Image 1: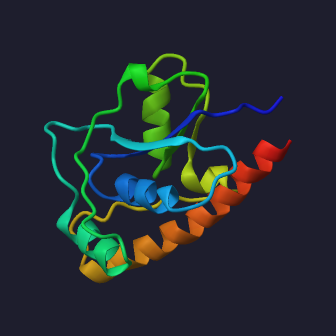
Image 2: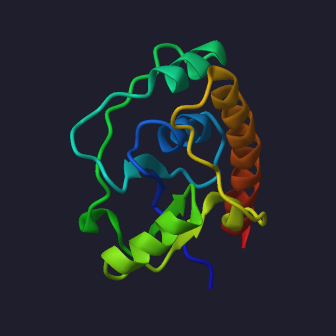
Length: 153
C-alpha cells in the first residue's frame, strides 16, 4: 500500500539554509498530488532569517526576495501522512531518537535512491552554496519523479 502524503518537511540542523532552499526549489515543481511543503530545524534557538549566502544563491537563480524564518521541528509536525526528508543521516537518527511515531523519515538522497549526506554549508564560501543549490535542484527533480510515480500507483 502506498502512503498518500499530505505534507513534506525538509529538516536540517537549524532551518536557515539547506532545508529552506530545498523547500523553495520543490515548491516551484509540478506535483500531481499537491503537498504542503515546509522546512524545520533540529536546533532552532530563535526565529532566524535565511542565511545571507543561501538567499544570494536563490536570488541569482530567479527566486525574487526569498524570505524564510527558521522553525523548530515539533512533535505536532509528525504523523502518518507526513514525509520527513533530512539533509544528513545523523538528523534522521536524531528524529527517531527524539520524537515518537516518526514512521516516514529518510534522508533526501536515500529517498531518491542515492547515498550520502548533503553536507553542512556553515563557514563555506558562496561558490559552495551555489554548488549545493545545483545539487538540490537535481535532487528535487528526482524527488518530483518519485512522488509523482507513487501517486500513479
